[in-house]
Image 1 (cartoon, rainbow, N blue to C red):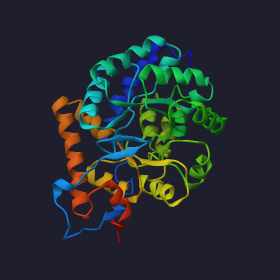
Image 2 (image 1 turned 135 degrees about the horizontal axis):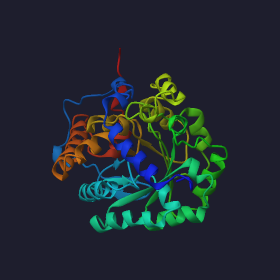
Image 3 (image 1 turned 30 degrees about the horizontal axis):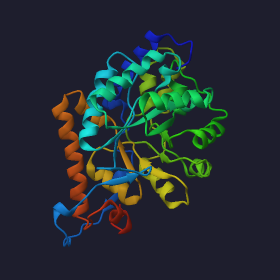
Length: 349
């Protein structure tokens, strides 16, 4: 985090983020574009349901599912317990898990204790580190490597959050030099680098700029889910220009489906990951069929986790069952076949 931001303020902001992300007013529901995509029903699938397998290979690592618990929270009093619960479920179900921003750890090494707690709870879980681009630009690569080591991360997510930084009362909208910093990190870090938006999507032009940097994956994280511009506007005080501006930009972004389509249609040297308004296993099946390698869930997982371990496990199991059902009903037995066989089309309106 910015070295001058007081820890109590940082922790308060992170708690606000959790509370506000659960509000329906801060969800860009219906704008992901997933309603424009339909899977083609196969009335005569030549397979048995128990033949359907959802094992995945992403970043050269095999996991039991193509799912990711997207980065949500870290660095405050309640995050350790929540992240340990999520990590245990991710380990049991075979999901990857992105942690919340490790920003605080850059200036407070005691913050690394949270990862020790997580590793104790789920020693085999596949964890992905996380740092904002604004912080990366002014951070030495060896310090990012230290974040990787403390988490025992399999990859490092660098999140892009331009709109959020503009609307956040404590924001740091300083992105000049970002492309250079990304490329340098991708070429020197010991683990793959994943570039991730935070709910506003990634355009075709930006995707082209990301080619050749040596990135492992790009998570387009499009419009359709939690909208951080709305959340930060909600945190702003009355009279703050950001509060009014956040209403102007309440629907800002590129739909998840449009970002995924753009990424999967172009020549690229990175994996395409998808998140942003993904609510069900059927949603995930559509994105996987379009060409995404990994699909991330955030708000539905957070809602379930706050109800307890059993509710979280049921939520994750349901998502997996829905994906398998979609695959069975399109006549494919593997994720590879889901992408090879043309099983999706644009919905006629």
